[in-house]
Length: 252
Image 1 (cartoon, rainbow, N blue to C red):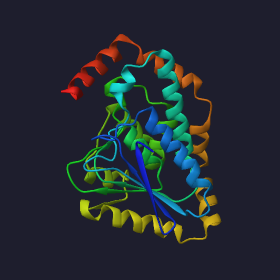
Image 2 (image 1 turned 135 degrees about the vertical axis):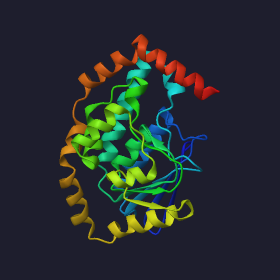
Image 3 (image 1 turned 120 degrees about the vertical axis):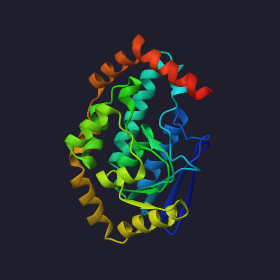
Image 4 (image 1 turned 60 degrees about the vertical axis):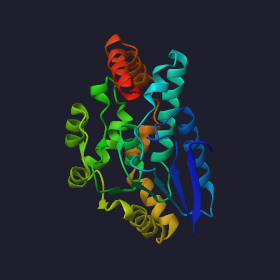
């Protein structure tokens, strides 16, 4: 694995996002995450999963620099891959907790939303879905995941504004479940996931799947039409201009 690192500790898999400074997700990373989730889910020796990042980034989201350079065929296949990853992580039946050690906007927030709980480090970090100001249409499946935790009205307002929250704001609205000092993030997240792992597995897992039936259906549904609309906007001059300006700033 080139972009993630996994260790096993007393039946708990600890997955660290490990790609560059900001853990921006490219095709390779999403592929490795998808494969690892599928492997962990069917491994009876692993009872739960904890996902974290490095330094001050959980994940900055998708690697827009790489994605911007794709042609139309590669762009479509990338988004299909990402949406499939979203459906798999949403339907992951074992306990899954995010240790948000730093920034988690956009795609980083999507991973966090798919988890059963989110423990975030205190500090000057951001989390949320900010795609709209960048010119990217958020698929309904991802919005439904957002609304699952924030409620429909709050998720609608936040999405349309491209609102990014600091840790205190995220805790207040229920986007994260606990704030801790950065040096305590792994201890607190492990305590949370092991609490879930202590329950009878079949009962807990089926209860999770029952609770998530709606968002599992949304993320696993045929999203061809939504993807067509999103890609039409992706290739529009307006969005390309916004992305180009953003990428130029990132490169600086």
